[in-house]
Amino acid sequence: MVSRVIPVASFDLLLFGATGDLAQRKIWPGLFHRYIAGQFDENCRLIGVSRSDLPREAFQDKVRASISGPDEDDAEIAKFLELVDYVSLDATGERGWDKLQGVVREGVVRAFYLSVAPRFFGPIARRLEEHGIATPDSRIVVEKPFGNDLASAQELNAELRACFQEHQIYRIDHYLGKETVQNLMALRFANSLFEPLWNSSHIDHVQITVAESLSVEGRGEYYDQSGAMRDMVQNHLMQLLCLTAMEPPSKFTSNAVRNEKLKVIEALEPVLDQDIARGQYRGNANQGSYLEHCGDPESRTESFVAMKVNVASWRWAGTPFYLRTGKCLRERASEIAVHFRSPPHMIFPGIDAPDGNVLVIRLQPDEGITLHTTIKDPGPGGMRLKEASLDMTFADSLSDEEQPQDAYERLIMDVIRGDQTLFMRGDEVEAAWAWADPIIAGWAASGRKPGPYDLGSSGPEDALLLMHRDGRRWRPIGS
Ligand code: NAP
Image (cartoon, rainbow, N blue to C red):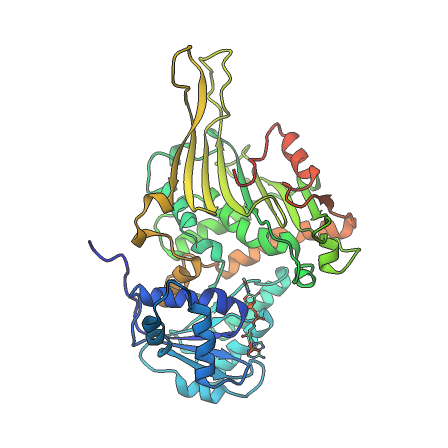
């Protein structure tokens, strides 16, 4: 069998924020897995960069702790750690930059991963340029959040573009690195089955859900500055909406795909106040409420939001997209559910039929795709109908070698390859903020408090009403 792992060119990856939570939980393990898989070799170097003054060995111990596990091989870990170096510097001062300059090599791909707070993006970009570490071929990766509103996103874009060109800037949205999200494009554009039906004549509505079961306890004060709209809708749900609604790009190149996504964002109609439901979770005997977790009893920040969004285009006129996301919901489950219209004429009168076909693209847990169809209920006793699922759970249908990688693994290797398809372009991010800002400003002006909802529920009553008013129902979370 031909190897599925295509090795990347030799590189120096400079990971800023190398001691931080994200680096420890996702980036180091992701790099290690790609190394084990043979995607890069001993000619590559991974240079951790952080503020702490640590000897190389102490830093390597931190990396070892983040990648060690019962299934990992100590000899492989030792080989991987030989690639790992460390430089301590101050992102906003002069300490350490000369040393960093001396560490990077010529003739290999050079990538800077900024896993640090956004206030450091500009200062780090500037120093990389001033010290001659940034070259016309190097790449810079930035983490979310990319701005808090349109003005701050424009400011970040301006800071980055002062030192790097757009084709060098990789804005991460790790949802785009998920296998099923990319599969949505394959499903739509590599099959002739779905695309003829992918419009308002055949699709009644689309539901996009990103539900989390955890609370914001421990980071409530930070979360209270953003809320569900800024933290999830403006970026992750928006990207899922774009991939579902976009026109087929002429080819699968980064700019062709991103041009089509941008057109979707620009075609979004303003969302009416009556088409939005916001919520804050209540507490119970065992767990605090949102207001307790964020530490501000008067907070008006939402831990849940649901909304009906219309895309003003020939393809989607009359087919709403319902988005919902929140904390402390009944399960951790993310999916895109495409609800097809019921058959135009029912030839089985008087027989209870399930709703029309639903195509569910599951992001988590159990990445996969399910098509809900209607079949005859087997057995004697006349014609009865029942629902049956055509299920493709990736874990069941793919071999070990084909199992989906963690999104970060995939995205970091795309950076080294120079493929920006799964990263947000600057104009996309700004367009998404231009759409979100008036909605958020409307909430601030009204002063209305989000409605309460129970822990482990499906969200506030208003979210259910939003659907019922339209004669529709949310899919149960985690169904
Ligand atoms: P974190 O745990 O607070 O780590 C911050 C990192 O920045 C540390 O390595 C710290 O180094 C370094 N740092 C702070 N001040 C510095 C300075 N003046 N000079 C050089 N380095 C400095 O943050 P995080 O949770 O990993 O998040 C990093 C970024 O990813 C943020 O933008 C965050 O919004 C984003 N993000 C995080 C997650 C997540 O799950 N954590 C998810 C999505 C996005 P020292 O430890 O040496 O001080």
